Amino acid sequence: MIETGTEPESRAERKLRTRRAILDATLELCSDSSLNALSLRQVAKQVGIVPTAFYRHFDSIESLGLALVEESFDSLRDLFRDVRRNARADEDIVDGSIDALVDHVHRRRDHFGFIARERVAGPRSVRGAIHREIELCERELATDLALMTGTDAWTGKDLHVLSALFVSVLVSTAEQILSTTRVEQEEQIIATVRTQLRMLLIGVYQWRSER
Amino acid sequence: MIETGTEPESRAERKLRTRRAILDATLELCSDSSLNALSLRQVAKQVGIVPTAFYRHFDSIESLGLALVEESFDSLRDLFRDVRRNARADEDIVDGSIDALVDHVHRRRDHFGFIARERVAGPRSVRGAIHREIELCERELATDLALMTGTDAWTGKDLHVLSALFVSVLVSTAEQILSTTRVEQEEQIIATVRTQLRMLLIGVYQWRSER
DNA sequence: TGTACATCAGTGAACGCGCGTTCACTGATGTAC
DNA sequence: TGTACATCAGTGAACGCGCGTTCACTGATGTAC
Image (cartoon, rainbow over all chains, first blue to last red; front, side, top):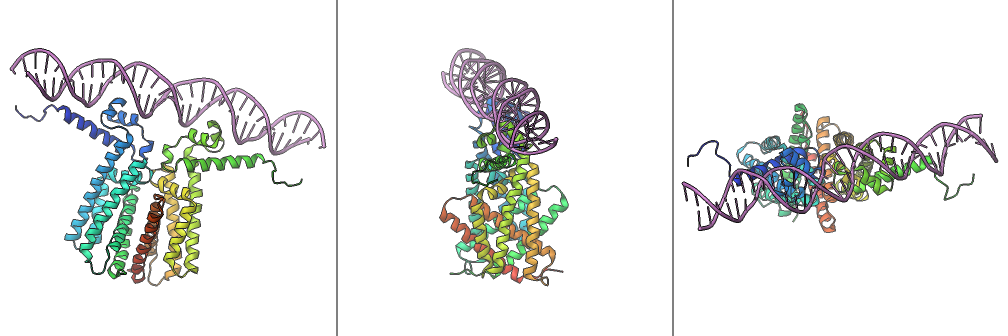
């Protein structure tokens, strides 16, 4: 059979495309509220399918939310991977990390906003899934930090504490970036977090864990 | 007229009591979701009034939300006042601040949870009101920090940056405390933030602003 | 290659229900004289 | 103090609408032979 650019989709391909459309419609529709305030019918309408067709793809808005947690954390892990790469290559770990953060938040506003909102206001199961994912990120970052600091001055516990602090600051910064649209305000947010991380780094360089 | 314990309420008193009941019912009903997912009828049912009676007290769920922002930030300012008092009196500023935080979050779980959720997932006007209030808190804290550090080593800008960092860490800690019910987990959260603040303080003591 | 049957994404009608808001009302409380 | 009237928090019926979910269905795609 001759392959052409306008090959008709298989049934599986079409289904996947509708599923994708549902995920995208949901991210758009709950972009300034929580999944709890979103109805299945709103999603179906936005996608252009009849409400009952929704059930061919997800059991409920809640299980759709769990799928979105997974793909949102793929974006967040992309960010962490870039931070790690910048930390190895670049001259300045602070600037490199902030650049990666800003870049990824801009590129996937939808995913980062979704995590920020559902983390505190989503359905219970979605909140739980997000908390587990964040803890995973903290542990992963702690492992990376161990390689950077050496194990002489830092206990594993303190590494996790520091990792959690970094994550807090990054989450908070991401939330601030998401809540502004003015460029000059964003630049100020970035300048602020840059200084904050530098203050923090001074403490980090001097720190010796109690044993 | 002789005052007795069972004096009949005036019309104004009764109205105030219903208003209070509406505010309390709302805090309870949206304790694990956003105002956007809450209906006027649910609130009325919980209070024990007919749905239309709601309008005698508030225009909409949204304006009710703005009233709750005000009273929630009264609780948050109480916390800040206690932190300030502990900072003056106590031996250790870190322990004192954390004690005050934990105490206030426990006492007004409803208010702190409300701020945490509506800050990111509430109606636009409510989010705006919360952001303004948080900025006010940061500025107030920056003024206090100026008195503690002296103005020789710190610019006003850096004081605000540091203040914002403290607020970020406190907000993040409050959110973690709110999302757990297990005592041992809470103790770990507290131990973590204690170490985080100590790391940060090392940086703070060494910091000299660029001029 | 052609045919007969199976699969299944999406349809459309129907259900009972809770929604926000309107309206005219009731009756206890408050006020003016 | 007593009376006549005003105020207003709360009532209850009614409205049109969107909700989640059920069910039997359609018709294009996929598969077995």
